[in-house]
Image 1 (cartoon, rainbow, N blue to C red):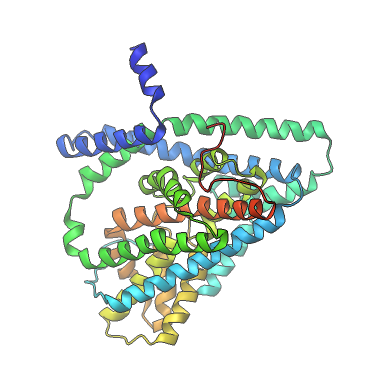
Image 2 (image 1 turned 30 degrees about the vertical axis):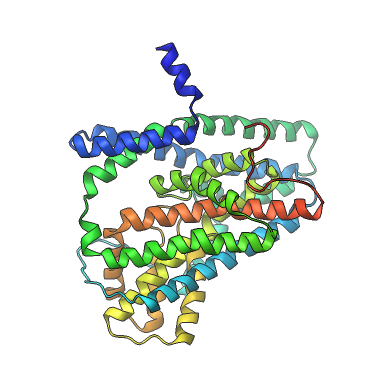
Length: 414
């Protein structure tokens, strides 16, 4: 048994996750009635979601309180990259929908919940999240509120003594260690998540909504493999694909199965640490990215809205399509960092075409039907992009400083 444990510990986490995926899929096909296996996935995602708000609050508070100068320009760069990439993702979705227009069969059989009434409501919700009660923000995993309070407290405590700063750093390190323990259980958690998907979803979604899925998946793959890498290459003036593939492999795979950008925050923070990035920078940009960097969400909102328009025979001209891209970009920034968070913003975008809320909510229901694929891939692109653009902003600073480095290289302590 000791030799087996030793051998298992010597295997890389990515290979362990791959093994968990294979075993989970096989168990889902062979013993779909063994529902207890899916509990492993539920516990794993629950643990990530529970620790993430505390981790973000402690990291940001500690980083701001003891931050060095020079983080501002990097932070402005990463925010710009988040917004530009999300806008281009929406444009890609518009182009794909023009080339491959899709109509859908609408059904109102699903309870879709309440949707924002418009972009004004989305912005209001964002602002209310920022000023939320700090205890409530931690309890509800409201990362905008958590960030706002952590930044304010960090700024207020910058003048405190070194002993208090060291204590806050020690608390942050302790929470980070707990996160590493949880991430070490990822192979078993993902095995449970894969088992649940395979044993319950079946293959029907590939036939009934195959065309819609192809447009969604195709658009997201173009964003992940062409648009985002191209933006990174232009900013760095270097080949960014090693970094892109590493982010997709070490962040995207986990996000694909957890289907939650918020739950993947600890995974991304750990990856940033292994890449040797500035902790003062990524401790803020990663949780912020889980809220505002929503490339996949922009694709989902745009494609699903245009599918509704085509289904109803509504003509979509170029100016309206451009306006839709901007609205989808702003709306995506307000998408919740949990599974299916982007779907409830479809009615907001549909209002641009005069589509009633009843019909728009039926489109949301269709999104829930195909969510096992759409939402998983969407989250993978969103979350891996958080690390990608954080690293690009950091590398850009290193280039200006004349520092030699290899894009996406493994850090010394990995």
